[in-house]
Image (cartoon, rainbow over all chains, first blue to last red; front, side):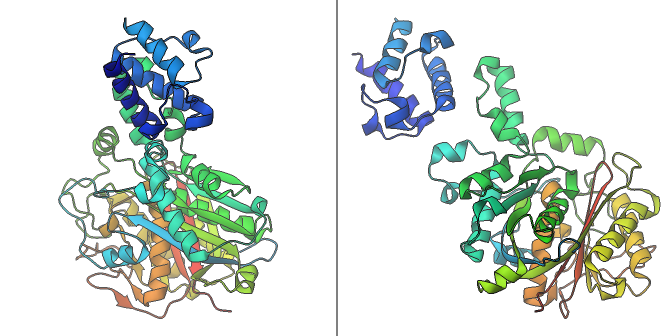
Amino acid sequence: MDQQLFDRFKKCAIDVLAVDAGKLTLEAKFKEDLGSDSLDLVEFVMALEEEFGISVPESDLDGVDTVGKAFNLVTSKVS
Amino acid sequence: MQGAGHRIAITGYGVVATCGIGKQNFWKGLLGPGLSGSHTVEIENWDATPYYAGPKEMRRADRCEQYAIAAAQEALDQSGDLPYDRSRIGTIFGTGIGGLRTLEGQVEVRVAKGKERVSPFLVPMMMSNAPGAAISMRYGFQGPSETICTACAAATHALGYAARQIAWGRCDAVLSGGAESAATITAVAGFENMTALSTTMVSKPFDATRDGFVFGEGAAVFVLERLDLAVKRGAKIYGEILGAGSNADAHHITAPSPGGVGAIACMKLALEDAGLNADQIKQVNAHGTSTPLNDAAEAHAVEAVFGSNNPPMTSIKGVTGHPLGAAGALEAAAVLLSFEHKLIPPTANTTVIASEMKVDIVTGKARAWTPGPTISNNFGFGGHNGSIIIAPFVN
């Protein structure tokens, strides 16, 4: 895992979702563990698009329910 | 108030104003110097963190809503727990505009970065019913939750309609009031270009040299409660709403009807609703915006309704500026504070009353009085008139 990339990802999550850094494990589920609803995630994806200069269409988000899956998605777009 | 016979008590109220946060700081501000030197007055160093669980919730509330939440918290701290069925506690709120800061900010985002970057929270933040909705959600009040949007008359109309929910027996308690925070660059330009704002940048209601208003902001929230139930639970009662009037000029989108005929009819409606004669009113809390047309029409209307021996009249807008839809809420709070302190706050900045006005404007310093029924007027663009009569509680 690219730690530098993950740190940038984490910063977006902390800013937008207002969660403690300690909760941002790869296994953490957005809804159950981080208390994020669908609008939270829309805002989070926007922040990631901005931070990494990527585009994430809604169709890519199907099944992306954990921090790890979201990070993998970002990684695949960046590289 | 006409209805099913229930009286309406005010058992708590909170204020967020440019001249003071919290009702007693607001009062001190009302006795202080008037505004000058700017087209606008805004709350400096506003910090919403004490009112929100975290930064996410806070960021997702427009400032207009944040003011409402802060004022509601102060009001409910005073009233204490409302021991009623949640479905019988309403939230009837007023605002002139709503989350304009959010809208303007997001328009800038769209222009600069494209529509894909517009916040998914734009809609729930800008909608004018957001402040009232936020209060009902935070406290779980499941009675009627409606927002009245009648420009600068909004909070007066909200308070009247809220009181009627109790008078008619639909609610046991209602949170009501108004909030505004809309002095964006675009909105200020709009008011400026329509020549509503003071070019000399001084708010001086009823003064011979008044030339427009100063654009303000703020919020006040009130706990209205069925009076017998409030007495029964031992609540402190700050005042009683005796009646309210609402009508329309049906004349012009911004100018009051000539001779203030709409305002005259509105005040008479409120008197009739309260079952009072004109000579029983002991104070007029004026709309008094400091615009040439409003103040002339209102002064004429007050003289027409109350005769040559009209009651003392004040406008707090010399200090608060004009907070649009929140005006009626801040002014109802000023009325309650005038009961508590047995003083009528002065109309700040006003020195020479326009000669054609045959009314008794309180100027210079606060005037001692024996508190009695007080009428508060607010008039909105669109020809909306609102009057409410509030009295000290007498068992």
